[in-house]
Amino acid sequence: MSEQVVTRFAPSPTGFLHIGGARTALFNWLYARHTGGKMLLRIEDTDRERSTEAATAAIIDGLTWLGLTWDGEAISQFQRAARHREVAEELVRRGKAYYAYETPEELAAMREQARAEGRPPRYNGQWRDRDPSEAPKGVPGAIRIKAPREGETIVHDLVQGEVRFPNKDLDDLIILRSDGVPTYMHAVVVDDHDMGVTHIIRGDDHLTNAARQTIIYQAMGWEVPKMAHIPLIHGADGAKLSKRHGALGVEAYRAMGYLPEALLNYLARLGWSHGDDEVMSIEQMIEWFDITDVNKGAARFDFAKLEALNGIHMRNMDDARLTDILIETLPHLPYGEAFAARLTDKAKAQLLQAMPGLKERAKTLVELADNAYFIVADRPLALDEKAAAILDADARAILKALLPALRSLAEWNVATTEAVVRDYAAKADLKLGKVAQPLRAALTGRSTSPGVFDVLAVLGREESLARIGGQNV
Image 1 (cartoon, rainbow, N blue to C red):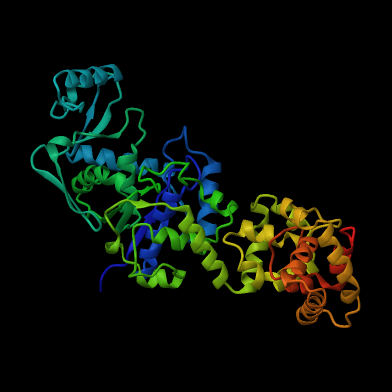
Image 2: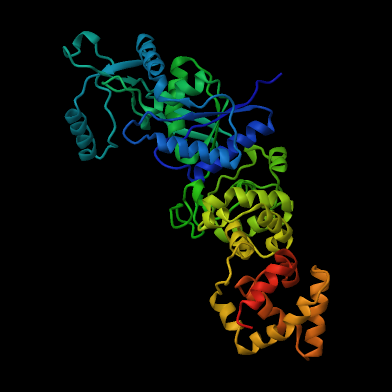
């Protein structure tokens, strides 16, 4: 029986969970779920100056909102520093690493000399084979790994294929600084080994790191996990993703009104595909995903495609579930708190009733909330610019003439209100739109809304008549 797949997502808590990190987490999560394995979460907080509690909380909040659950407790890399030191010292005892005693000034001079001689600015290994007795008294040394000097280090990558690194390009990197603080490069190897990680799935900007880390694995005699370096996400213009393209924190996408399911569907399609399938459920992605199917080339982020996909997910969603999600998300949306504060039980029921018509006209939860606000709006209704233009003197006269027929209705529903409006339009020799548009403007304050007869039914007789009558008709 083959071993259980263990993946890990290992963000640095120096900011929010950005969209590239979210996709890396998704690919780790999907592969673990697809294979019946586990995904672990490690917070790489060794950079004490830049790591913050707020960023850690934001990353966990972002993953939770996306539904990317991890197995066990989140692990702090910083808290494992003693174990990292222990392994570094073990490598010295094995003759695979050594103490080096250069001052920062000596290292700077070494780099300068290399540049002057036209060589890459690498460490020259001058303490590599010296006797420890030569160490300067009272000076703490840094520990450096002995990188092989001949041949190649090969990374067998599940996405990039076989990648070869000439060992002459890989110098003896520091694994433990002179102050006893482990380096990121070393800490990652120790943590992945101790956590039983079998598959490292991360951005292809870590490919060179993979070669350096392979050297540490081999020095300890540890098995090297399988690696998969996925392409970075670029903007629609092909340039590296920046904030202007959408390299925002995941919480920004929640505030823009995207559904977690739609965002995950879109991120999965950035660099991976399953035939011509564009719209996928979480269950389908888990069933179909394999890390070996990820493309080598960079993917391009396109807001228009994300928005269109979000609209499809909203329209496909059960009305009650979409209503619940909208209500949960309101506090995160622009002006959503004012809406949430007005949501009585009656308004929630009206929102559910209006949802079939609302979701047909919205691509994001922001648009959905905006279009639904008429349900909780106060009288007299504030009109937007287009609605105000529609409600000219002629339109108000039409509404005034229509009011008595609406007031006389014994039953108030979609069918009865539609019959009255159509009957009035026919008798007045008007096209239906000439009556429906002023009615929509008076009822919602907008020029667009769900079907006007649905709006009349959702608002009910009393509120509808009050809104129409409130427009000075």
